[in-house]
Image (cartoon, rainbow, N blue to C red; front, side, top):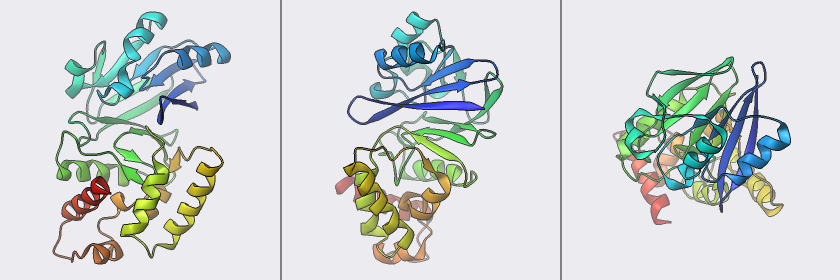
Length: 255
């Protein structure tokens, strides 16, 4: 089984330490800085074996080179962004399987935010590291891909089991919650979740990770086929899910 530790870094990033207890293997996911990783490893008595990258943005990779040198870790990352992430030793693509000790992750290509973005799904451990593809109540901006690509990526993640725990890359949930209500105002589950998010953030508590089943019920970016959302947007049954997603994402970008 995996022990997963969330490390808040920079202004609103989350990176993760993932420890597989049977073999003692440990990975750092998307480290932009070094010191918090080294400090936590020391506190736990763990050594760093792997660094896992999801995409090339600096706030997810800037600590990789120094950590690799300092700890002697092996770096795995997206095959499509190998030339953008220095130090990748093992490149991964859709359908590849990655062994972290006795635990196995399946690679899911999730382009849109960046063209080569990947997510790591540890099926048996019910853990999804979605970085900037899927957030709590949100999704990443579409910087490099197309809206259709981004929706296709989210549709893949939506197919995973409801009890999957989503470890995303940022604490954006409060802003996402307030926006979600503008496009899905009659969703009672969303209203209740927004109240909880407001409470947690007022207390300085994190809202990440989240449960995928809850995302499916409340995250508008996973629900472009919902009739209520379509009605608010003024879009009917003739619109594709990708078109509705694009309208939601565009409104969020302009909010």
